[in-house]
Image 1 (cartoon, helix red, strand yellow):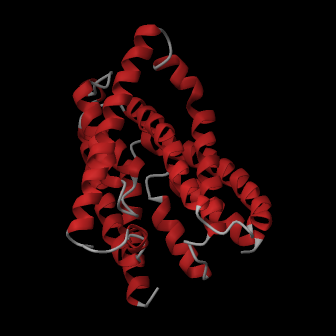
Image 2 (cartoon, rainbow, N blue to C red):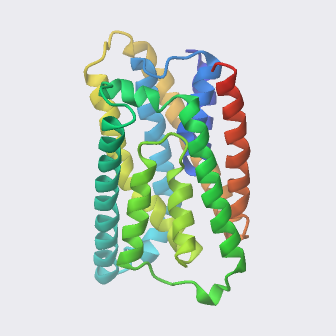
Length: 283
């Protein structure tokens, strides 16, 4: 894996992770086009570092806003903690239940590692991208017709539960964007765009260490002999994913505030067509 490949994957991860277009779908496609093995220990280490970079980008970008809304006083903090707990618990329940259902039906008898590899196939990624695109398009159209006066200034506990459940639906499917789905569902529930964006990425910061820990467990059982050569490129990748993540968040906020959310939906639908074509051609 060359430095150029590391930088390209870092930029793709940083942009796609924080835009509602699914980083996993874009990274899987990029890896296949580059001829890389996503399951190799070096690639797993790189993925851990790239996720770390984007997590820090989210914290840096939203910190002032979180301080002003969720951490402004003890009551606001207590409410946010309850909202986050409700959403995260629902995410875990729905995500794990969905994984079990899939394991015992569609992929019955497949080892867990093999199951994860199957979800990286473009034949699965393409319809997930299409579904995310349609959801974003619907939310964008509804948001465009709703007066600002009808938007809810606060996130309710029921709304947080729905957001968490939808987030759980995203976990097993590469291509079904977490940020795209959660922000779209928040918009459809009438939550102010600025508030749902902030809450969605706060949930991401809660989930990201869990995802990093899961990948770290895979590394624990891997051959670490080549890590010395992969460590420096992975650190460079983390830096580029951090910078790309900051750029992506500015882009997302701008389009969300200007009523251009549905543009991301159009992109996901078009991207799903491209992925379908790549899958048909044997990638």
